Image (cartoon, rainbow, N blue to C red; front, side, top):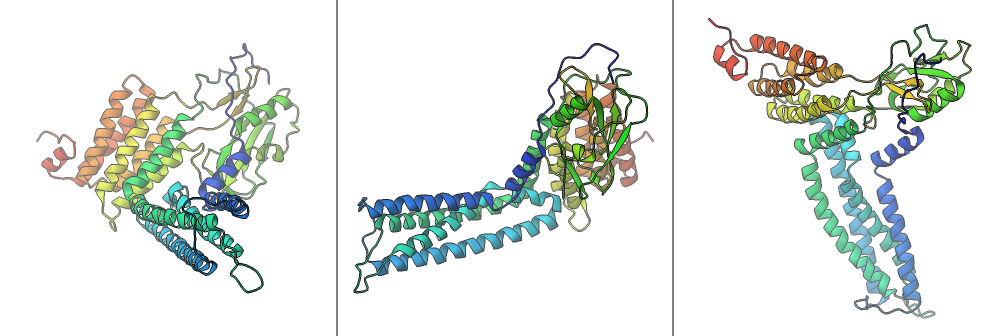
Length: 440
């Protein structure tokens, strides 16, 4: 496929390496990496302190007791910090259950990604492991050999114990705040803002006739286990397309669930010959996972926030204030998208030829995702009605010179008026909801 017009200025595709992204997500979502790193670091520190003790270094404030006292102290420290670890794990599990039931199962990932909890676990486990390692080298006097008490190492264990107490107090305060609705929704909103900043949005679109209009020469089906599309490695796909002189169109959106053997990509050859591209060539650059992530999926951030608002507006919870707090975050995110350039589905090679198309969530999709369910479930709440109307009025003024972005907002405004008319029969209630009642 040779473009019938001059090559465009090259816009480097982003590098979303699938393997690196999967490793990063495994580390960020796992509770093991930070504690394991801290335990390893503590073991190395313990080895260094043991070397000081072996050389007879006498530091100020070092432990001066006998071997029996050292063993008692170290055993107490190990048992106490292990108990703290068990308590922290129990509290974390309870917090996860509360968050899942009260807000949404999707927001549980914010707890798994929370650094404070992992550091607290790391401090407790490090102290336990360190105390046990030092306990091994304490030698009481038995008549055949003199006692050996590593004073520096035992003193360090006491310092670690004090650090564990401080970490325990910090953790109790931290977990009490982390299960608050405002903390969770702000964490999701912050991650969504970051995803919005990293969207691929150069000033570039396909020219008429630049992309093949004929049926694809090859349709690649996924040979991976089923899962949600969590990432697409655009630069590697562009390099593949350029090397094989083909054009690739990815079919599912980021975040879509891809069943087994689902169509994954359409391929056109530049010269119309049968492409030699295999399914493995494509799937190694498309990541599938058990659940959606926020790496390239802006819509997933809105999905989590809307889920929280839906749960708050359910009859079982009936908490419109939490829903309006969610609307505040959605308002900010929609404002950021409204003033940002349109996301670009086109990726070009070094010669400026369009080599890759990736479907994107456009403004209309995002607006409906962000507002439809909240409007439906919160249509009978005066507070929710007012906040949605404030959001729509502000965005309408912001994009007044953009007819393409104004249209879905006007649709939402009309739907909101009809929802208010159905929910509120009294003109005073309609006025308080922000809807001007018709003249009698």
